[in-house]
Length: 267
Image 1 (cartoon, one colour):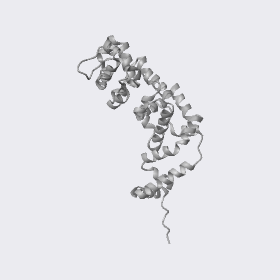
Image 2 (tube, helix red, strand yellow):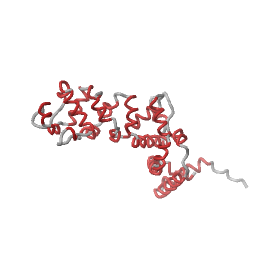
Image 3 (cartoon, one colour):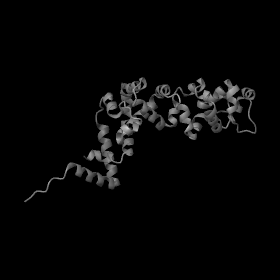
Image 4 (cartoon, one colour):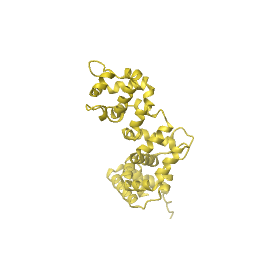
């Protein structure tokens, strides 16, 4: 009697994958198994972890073209963790590679402008924070050419002398329109020491981690001192410790991003 040929492993995998994805409960259970299995596994060396997940130097114009699925998601998660832990260092390397980065970042989003520049305070300039402090100090220091770009919400525009005497008047600028005018007509502000000081701590990275992660991927796909620093940081002992501490969180995030991850543990 003829024996039916064994079903190829790839066909059994495809069938199993289809069955799991068709059942939400099976999908959830498989994700739980995978997360528990990986979380219980011993940590590989940090250098090996980085080598597996991070992009290699490439001449391709788009970093996204070199990574897909879980690998791409893992790259982004690792870079975001680095930004959360070392924002000042990450920003220092990014800004040296792309001087136009800040104008491009704020031009693309009103929410980013509000998040960074809408921090005026009735207590006066000393209480201003982030971009609000940079804008106020620059406008006063360079008032001969910068003051004209400010737009005010009150009945009339404020003069530099009036604001210097009564700093709480600086709570009246139309932040959105003022910053938009500075983006369009005042390139000096975006190269100023005032703005550089407000950003040196890297707090603005948190306004949109995804944006800066994509920029960082571009750095990692090139050949530069910044790439060497990022790889060294991601392979360092300190990075290994905090990455390990948050490993389960990262894995669960990656699982949610990939529809096929739930089948890995079943193969």
